[in-house]
Image 1: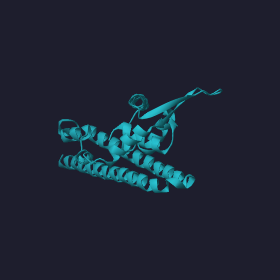
Image 2 (image 1 turned 180 degrees about the vertical axis):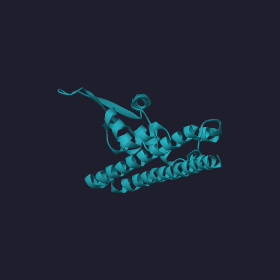
Image 3 (image 1 turned 45 degrees about the vertical axis):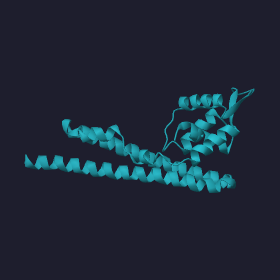
Image 4 (image 1 turned 120 degrees about the horizontal axis):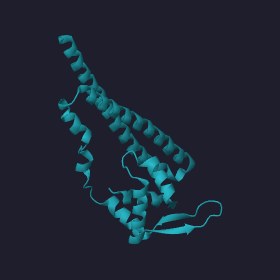
Amino acid sequence: MSLKHGLLGLLCYESMTGYELDKVFKESLAYFWHAKGSQIYCELDSMERKGWLTSERVVQEEKPNKRVYTITDDGKAEFMDWLSSPETDIKNAVNIKTPLLMRVFFANETAKSQTLDLLRSFRDECLARVAKINGTREYIADIAMQNPMYSEHTIYWKLTSSYGEMINRARIAWAEESIAILESINQNHKSED
């Protein structure tokens, strides 16, 4: 997947400004695909040049002017081609490539307290992400209640939020187990002294 396909998918639902896309992206997709606002605007410009979307400048009197993006037929075709193409990213989805694990692997070269701090920070970040995902679930439920036409869509949205929650809960369990192991090593060394 790429950012452009996520944006095209959101624009399939309705036309939006870059600001609205950034906000919706952060409320719905950010727990499994990270993008900065500047990246979103860069992609929007690129997709407009490719003819995948159009934009209309809307002049406002008491607010700054805005640009509203709408997906084109070519953009819908690109999105549908990507969505229906054979999945080649399965191996990428299950691969783990993280600097954190590299640090833990070589952590014997540093103080255990440093590794414990790293693991506790990681655990706390994962706890914060679970809380954010719970907020996303509330957002999804609100959309389903406000727009019944999205009720079938929200089933799939819930599946992705469930994945995010389960992954982060597994990370939390791993971090807590790792912390307990390192703390027990520290205790064993103290009792030997």
